[in-house]
Amino acid sequence: MLSYPLFFALRDCFMGSAAHSNATPNLQPMARISSLLNQNNGLYHKYFRDVSLLATFVDNHDNASFLNKQTNQQLYRNALAMVMFSVGIPIVYYGTEQAFSGGNDPMNRESLFPNFNRNAQLYLFIQKAIAIKRHSNISLEGQLEVLVTDSVYAFSRGEVVVIVTNSNMQHSVQLPVSPFAVGDSVCDVMHEQSQCVSVSSTGYSIAMTGEPKVMMRAPKV
Image (cartoon, rainbow, N blue to C red; front, side, top):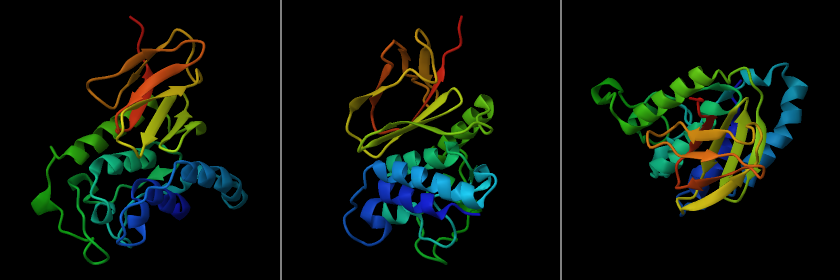
């Protein structure tokens, strides 16, 4: 079963009003995602024995491509991070990794292979996300909300914290200690220029620059 409620919430927060019209994008606050997940958690469990079997997605053959309405690939990467790391079975529609931007069916069914590029930015981003997910083995972990602001949503799965944002303004966010421990060094493993910070009794502060972050405990040496 496709998780369409999450699909619409992700498009509202990362695509904005462009998800429904040709108007200037008006991104909804991250409370939209928080409310949807908290509300639907009970509804999903009522009808599905295992909600982790629901499919998460932000693009498919029945809808115009995300990039057709919202051309900001930074916002797209944040939406894809939610798809890749949230509880559920992630679906990445073909052409996403090549930044396809086709409109409504059949314009969203472009030919892939004449345009296939393993060095494309989104290809490398998705490849990295898959590698992190496999290495961290979070697929069997539940999902706990960690932080919600107007522009930031963070959740944990096991000992991994995922932080997404729909703002490119540089600012800092304060996250709680859990699921880490005081004294831990935690790092953003999504980026080569990894940001590492120490966890104190009040948690840890992360500098947001518009990109999604995946925080994991640094190995002890």
